[in-house]
Length: 145
Image 1: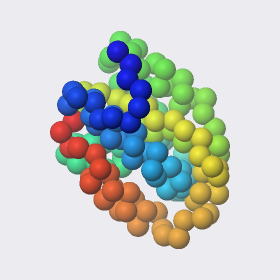
Image 2: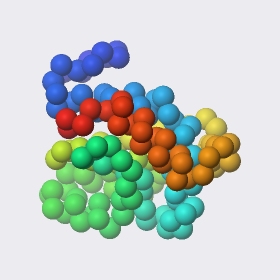
Image 3: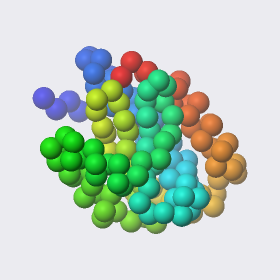
């Protein structure tokens, strides 16, 4: 069943997905700045920003290799995620992999302005941006995933 609108789902299993969507919507520019800044810091296009929700929401680095290995372990059930990772343009869009208890969620959006411009416009450094965004995530996303 597909529900439209902004109401919180009744089932506990999917509440984190809704809360994460709301968090991303409200913080697109900051997330775009973070994704671009970390990509420059990692100096490796095989790394992707991730959000691990356990024990509380925090950012992680997801390697293309580890996602590929996970895909093999789950009988290629996340093949589409690999396709998105291989085809997206980080100068124009943002990809984040959210990791819940036994679940993955792919976040993909095209911010305005572009990720490099979002990064230029932030007034804090990456460490402060991470701390600020993680603090917001902890407040907004239920840790009961």
